Image (cartoon, rainbow, N blue to C red):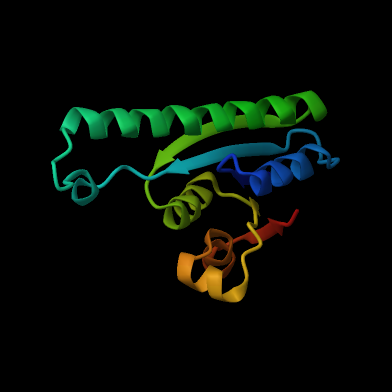
Length: 147
C-alpha cells in the first residue's frame, strides 16, 4: 500500500499524522510525507517601500526549512509508533492543492491522508479548502482526518 500523507504542521495535520502512525498497516506499506510551501510572490515583495530580493529569498528559504522540519517531525512520529512503515519525506514549492494532487499521481498513491481545519462552509469557500480540493480531484482514495 502507498499512502501520501500531506501535512502543514498545524494541529489538524498532526492529528492526521497520529492517525496514520497508530494504524496497523501491512508490512512494507510506504508512507510518503509531503509538506508544501508557497513562495513569496514578486507582487507581494513589491511593497510601498520595496522589498529586496534577498529578503524575499530569505523568507522562501525559511518557509522551505520550516516545511522540511515538519516532514522530519512527522517521520519521527511514524517511525516511533510504527517501525514497519517505509517512510519518505518531500518538501514541495507550489500551491498545496495542486502540489498534493500531482505528487500523489507521481507517487502512485493508493490513499491520500490530510487533516481538516474544520472551517465552516462560508470560511471554506472564502479560504479555499485544501482537503476539499484534494478529495474532489484525487484519482485515488482520500481520507480527511478531523480533530
